[in-house]
Amino acid sequence: MDVYDTANRLAGEIKQSQEYVNYKMAKQTLNLNTALKEKMQEFEKARYEVQIEMMQTGKNNEEKYKEVQALYAELVENNEAKKFFEAETKFSIMIADVNKIIGEAIKDVMQ
Image (cartoon, rainbow, N blue to C red; front, side):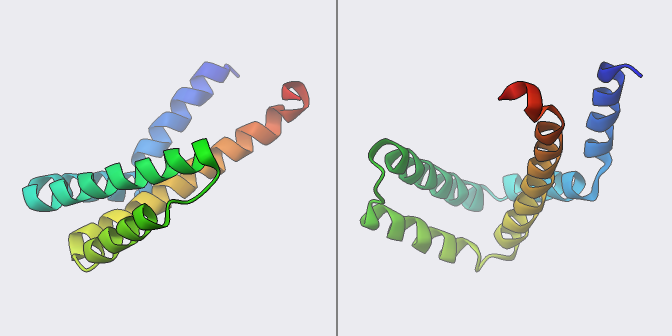
């Protein structure tokens, strides 16, 4: 069995998975709503900045963290944004699980 063939099959199965399809549809729906898309981009930027600051300093900037929480709370009031977050989370979990399975299979040579 060729590893590349298996990887290509896995890629195809991921694209056919319910997690992928739901995430893609949620993202497309979100992109049709310009105001919501901009609000989501604002949230993503703020979330990214908080993560970067946390990695660089080891501390949470409480003011920025509260801003991210407020933006998220506002966004999840919108049904489209809520569906997007749910789909994104389920897709991310699936990809993390796949990565974990592959990592476990090769950990003996990666250490």
